Amino acid sequence: MSIVLALPDKYVRKAVWTLLGGASGITVNTKNVKAYDSRITGSTIPSQYILMTTQTNQVSEAVKCGDRWHSSILLDIVTRYTSTGNTGSRLLADDIAEAVRNLLETDLTLEGGLNVINQKLDLPNDMSSVTENENVFRKFIRIELKIN
Image 1 (cartoon, helix red, strand yellow):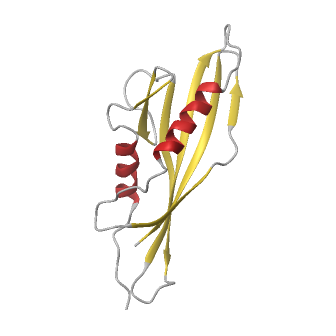
Image 2 (cartoon, one colour):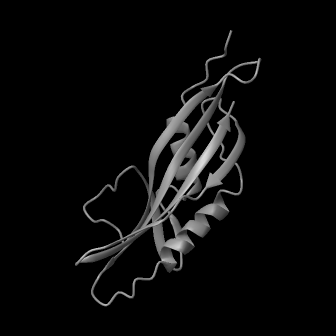
Image 3 (cartoon, rainbow, N blue to C red):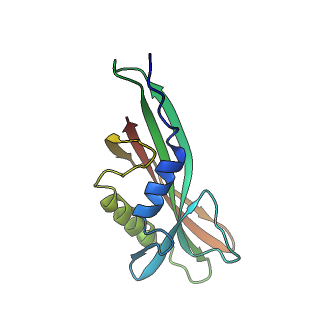
């Protein structure tokens, strides 16, 4: 018989948000960078931010003493510039990704009776969008967790 674990989604988002400075955010290259849950809130879209986007969960029955979760969350790091006079530098996006990666060197602490057994990072392809009005540079970090 399996032990039923709490669905980790809200606990993972809360742990990531807390790690990324909560309501205050983190400072990178003198810029304040805040994390948001899947979309920006407020009337002004900042020039740099982090979205906590796609989450996945899969039950693993690989151990006899109860089930585990294989869980992941995708962080979308976004920097935006008006296209007028912009050199097209991705440097700030790179530096934010590096700061986030450094923060994720320690395992997340989850609530809800969940414990992180293993945590690893995957950094998929980045993305650039250039329009007539704006240049947007995005970096992605997927946090993959094994949770008991």
